[in-house]
Image 1 (cartoon, one colour):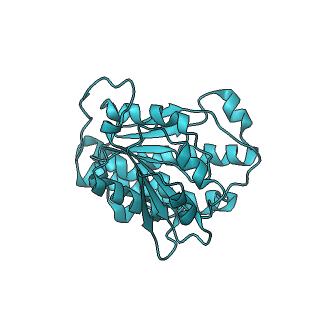
Image 2 (image 1 turned 90 degrees about the vertical axis):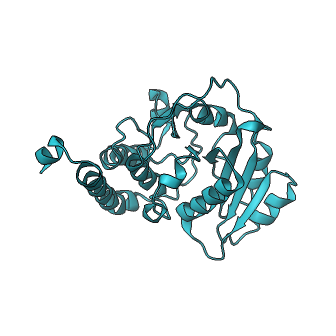
Length: 265
């Protein structure tokens, strides 16, 4: 299992030598994908695009940009955001990436925050970094009420399930992963669709990964979320409780057994 990382060096600004790879799942993002690719900073080493059986021409438009950093992975059938990200992470790891960053193809994740996402990993202070849109109260007030309530409930349940009580914004898909911790994760247990981010946290805890968050503004312009309130209220709690029980079993009875295990019984 991975232990808390040793500080490698003081990193003030990432470079191409740091081998940062951006992984972008693509499904119906044709109007946005070219702008997303063009906005990526020069120090990004590779860009892995995963065409998740998109019915539009997202892949063709992405390749038309002509960026030599782009590597395309195609799915014959739609696998969901989790399935697309696992394909992208595996491809990035095979290429030799040191840090893998998830960015969506719809332009909602701002490239100017890429640097603050990767610095904690490059400097050896974390294995996994998530964006947090709600550090400042003004960002919370910008969020639509339904999302705010859903995020608060998900936040508590995700903390309980994963054991990462410092994580406040579990549905934020802007994340960065240390490639050294990736092989330690049980990919079969990672959810293939909307539960992807939360299930990642459960597996990261079992791998003893160090997780941190970085602040970033929330951007809401009236766009409709693809994550339904019904799924948040009905499906996610059951999955999170199952993740919680699995984590407790492995952490306190399989990987370790102590007085705490007896007290839990």
